[in-house]
Structures are given as C-alpha cells and as structure tokens.
Image 1 (cartoon, rainbow, N blue to C red):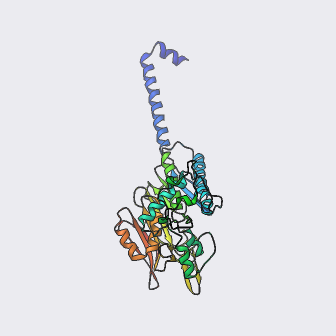
Image 2 (spheres, rainbow, N blue to C red):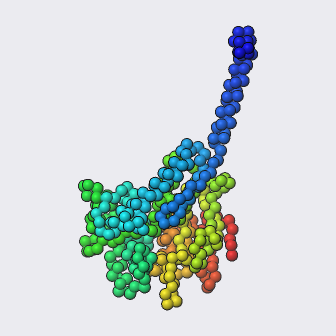
Image 3 (cartoon, helix red, strand yellow):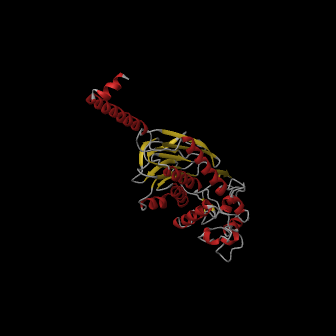
Length: 370
C-alpha cells in the first residue's frame, strides 16, 4: 500500500519506471510462454486397424487439438474405412456389394472406386481391383482354394476386370443414392458382376486419409504407419524420416526384425510402400506360389524380383506402384521407375541365389546390411 501510495502521489517518475518494468516482465513472460509452446512435442498414437496395428507419430508444435482428441478422430476414421472398404469385415459395404446386395455407398466407397479405376488405367491393367475372384481362386483372397486347373483359371479370369465396369460409380447410383452391383456393369456381354478387392491400395489410401486429417489440424511433421507409410516433415531429431526395408526371405514375418536396407525418405510428403512375395505364399509339389497375381493372365507371377519399395507423392500411389512393379518384374520395373520423376524405388532381387539391390538415383540409402 505504501509503495502504491507514493507512486500515485509523490513519485510519478518511479511509478512510470515500475509500470514499464512490469510491462517488460509481462512481455518477457509471454515470450517465454510462446517459446515453450512452440517447442517440438512429438507424440505417438497407436491402436488397432485393418486386422493389425497402426502407429501415428506427430509433432504437436502449433497444433491446438489435444492428443486424446486426435487419437479418437484417427480411430473413428479408420473404423469408417473398415465399415466401408474392408473385405475382411463381412458387414462392410464392399462385402455386401460383392455378395450382390444393394448398398448405399458413402463418400469413401465412391472415392476409392474412382481412385482404383484411375490406378487400373495408370498401371496398364496390372493393378486390377475387380479381380478379387482370382485371389480367392489361388487361396490369397477371402477363401482358401488353391492350385486351380487351367480351365478354372480361364473361367474365373473371364469374369474379372475393371474394364468391364463403368468408370464413374456416381453415375450408376439410383435416385435414392443406392447402388445395385449389376448397375455398375458396362460390358453388355458380362453376366456376373466382378467382385472388388482393394487390398492392393487400401492401406495406402487409409494412410492418406489420416494424413489429410492431420494436415487439417495443423500437423506438419508426421509419420503414419498402417502397414504402409505416409510421412512428411522431419523426425524428432529434426532429420528426414528413416525407414528400414525388411530382408525379403521366406519366414521373415516380423517387420523390422531383419533389415536389408535403411533409407531416408525424400523431403516433402511421400507415401512409402513395400510389396513382396516372402510373407504370403505357399509351396506345393516343390513350387512356390506367391500372392502377387497378374490380372492380365490370371496366374501368380514367377520372376526374380523379391520385393519392391516405392516412394510416391501419396501412399495410395506408392501402394499401387509397388504392386505394379511386383507384377511386371525387375527389368520393366527399373525402366518404369527411371522414367517416372515423381517416383523412387529400391528393388531387392535374386541373382543366381544371391540377394541384390537396385535403387533409383533419388533413393537415399543410409546403410546396407549384407
């Protein structure tokens, strides 16, 4: 009270000095608060999705949304994707569509179909989401059949293909927004509706949708891992994100346990996907049958390319092109990547029993384990 009285009545200069000092302290405190608030704050969110687990590592710097809310929104988004697009969920829209039911497609279902049709064209029919029965036939889909006869392959193959369907799902919807599978058929000679299977791009697509949400709340540094990967910005060490490539040997079923290569993801937003034939396969009569089916022939591929890791502007494309490379084989894949400026890749292949790697010019290796 004494100081306040003197300041107000007898020492105006001291009063002003105290006021300025107080303002300085307030300003300094504000700067300190802002500095603390703007520090990097990396957190990892995880959960279950699409028959496995996911992990999302993000920098909360500049983000006002609490981690709990972000985690809840990511979980909700992945559940919506599962309800719409998962062939493993028997009550999903795609499962009911494949069973011949009339469905009410949501925006995810329509958007995925559009992306799938574009990818079918971009990959010259090598990535064909309307070839689900072929994967079932060979035991890599949602059934356990295997080693079909040549006649059976021809029969099933004749009923497959995105080219037999309309390229615009929205135009096939009824006035009430529903869709009958038969209304999507464009080929007048086709009697049976081809079944859809988005396994070649669904996880990449899921990564992109999660990343889209994270961007919307201000996240700049992120790694989204849902089996496939999307990343942007920098890791907690303020360096490019680093990713390992599993050694493609039969029985290497635990990601990260045995690595063949480690690399830095290029700057900017990128999807990163590895496709290979060392986890999903079976051996009959001494021959290995891999889960990569060439939709053009109806048969599993048979070449020396063991795995293809592709980086692309988004994870959907990376997913699609990794599969595409596994279909066309090593030499064609090299030519394709070398002529595609937006793509980088690392191919691991077998040469006379020895495992070797080929990487495009922009694929930055950190270490090589022999």
